[in-house]
Image (tube, rainbow, N blue to C red; front, side):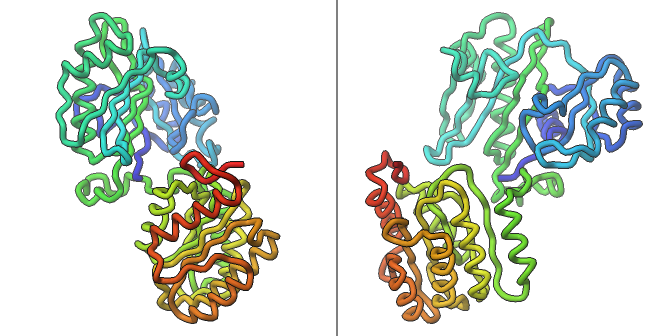
Length: 409
């Protein structure tokens, strides 16, 4: 997923007919004073960092005059918000708000539909909005289907919105949907969408997330998007893996991406095949706790170090080790490293489910090492999808029947 910082997101939406406040991103307090002076009147100063809930962390400040705007910028620049250093702030006019609304368009990859969500109240998390009965309404569209204003109007009405703002809300929603399609977006969110006393609509904040695979169609966005985990600071476990590579850079590579939740440690390799394995695990009902790759003929030390990180995440209750085919990574080296980490962590089968699906260099030796440790071995006669199902079934047999996800205690 590729995402944009707020000022870039607003610029892109403004070019497609979505009203946004006047403003400018600046790197220094004096520049903030100058922008505030040019805008005239109260301004809002926001830290430009790729995190949500900035207001709750003091990263959004109201300034009554240019001097206060400079002071607010000075207080924000150089500090960290959500683990990210603030090197720029957005200074924009303060919009007098009569009512705040919520509007988002998101892609549901599982159902292959586009969901349009509207809320009669905005400015808070969508999870909080959903607690209010009738506060949120949505409709689903097939990709390529046109969003007509009359459907948008009915959608807002079903969320409890009435009054003269309805036609404007309908037109803006249709415009946002067109932008969603044009940008190859995965998410466009405006929260809050301000309604002024005169009925004008203004996007006070905006989130734009694009399909990373479609960026080649948008060369105008080069250098402006944040891709993958760059949207958040690396976790402690991810930093450990960076250190592992730095300590032994000359042979093999280890990659680790920590995921939220999950109970199956995932250790794989093979580029595209590793993605197929990950998807297969999800389809089988598994809940991966991470995405980790090892390749390039790593040493036993590097394999063991990565496996330790995978096993150390709280909540991991099983391990899936898999490659489609190892070319230069030796299966016996992989097996020794993984088994070493399992023994050090005190997590050996049958108490801790482990499935290895491997084939390649020194396969027979690797199989013997895995099986001696009680690991369930699967060879090339077992497909990647079948191997994922075996892993999920092993979790259910060990921890009890689940509800479609990895077994829960």
